[in-house]
Length: 149
Image (cartoon, rainbow, N blue to C red; front, side, top):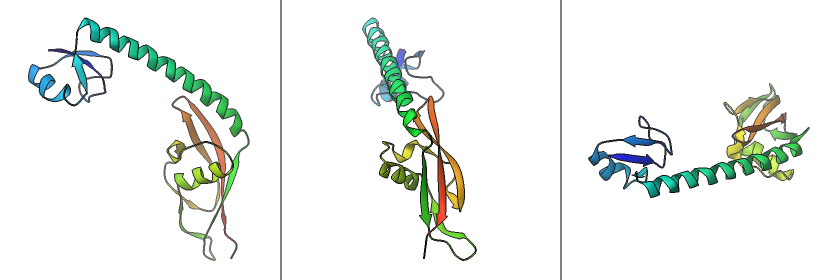
């Protein structure tokens, strides 16, 4: 059976691809789960239109992200944390902490946009990436300092 994928299916393909699968696999799993639709002329036109609209939305979102990236020039945030006498932190600083401080400064970001390989566990200065769009990233300086007792 020939189907058009609506979502990415591992080992099968990406959205918009036309693939041939067993009838039972298509009718019992892919179509009921919303992963695919039966391939016919009308569905091909619908998918082509959805792909075109998706491209337009993506370009618009990228343009907005590029404009927003200009507001992140020379942005930094200072996060005070509890630490002992040897400057060993109690806990760590994560994406949510950084996003919360940036929101307090008036930047519209979500913690999911903050890119950290692992939480910050030492005092000091770090450059942290903020992904505004899948193709637009900015860098922000994060100062992790010892809180005054």
